[in-house]
Image: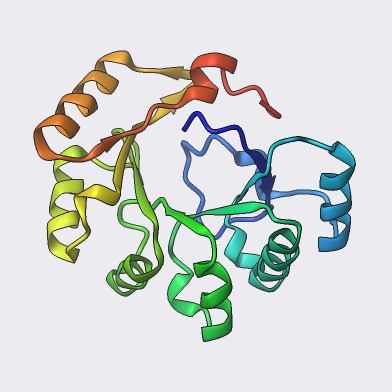
Amino acid sequence: MGRPSIFIRFSGCNLSCEWCDEKHARTGENLSVSEVVEKLTEMNFSIRRVVITGGEPLLQKESCVKLITELKKLNYAVMIETNGTLLNRLNQEEKEAVRSCEITVSPKRGKISGNAIRAAISLASQFKFVIGEEEGAWRLEDVKKAVEKYGISKEVVWLMPMSVNDTIDDELAREIWEFCVREGYNYSDRLHVRIWKNIRGK
């Protein structure tokens, strides 16, 4: 949060959360990895940090791995955002490529298996739990139970308020903040929503 980054968004997702703030990512333009890298180079940004996200980028794991390889050759720091459901299906070579990146796993409540969570623990740099009342979002006590059940380190757990209709419930944000202080988790706000109201491209 707060680090300028270039987002490369893969289309398609194996989940269909009603509260998803990137529903447009379920479909997209067909581009080869070389075309993506070319577009990135043409932008000529001074930013050297790329976030690969979606949708769910590991649905296209071959292209994702190839993109990681090309970005690393160009000395980009690479981060991957994933819902975590496919990490236990990667082969060893794919795991090594993914492990070379910073990995944020954002599991959706009731939509990820225990085996997938265990696989995610061995790869994840951090877990991001979206807090809210909607299906797939987490309640604070459910996060606590999951962290204890699977032995996830509190230091890598980030809690983020859900945003609905391009707004953030400040009361919910304060509740999450107090929970983080009390329990030893990290708090993540949604800066793009606060500043840009979730305008695409910002």
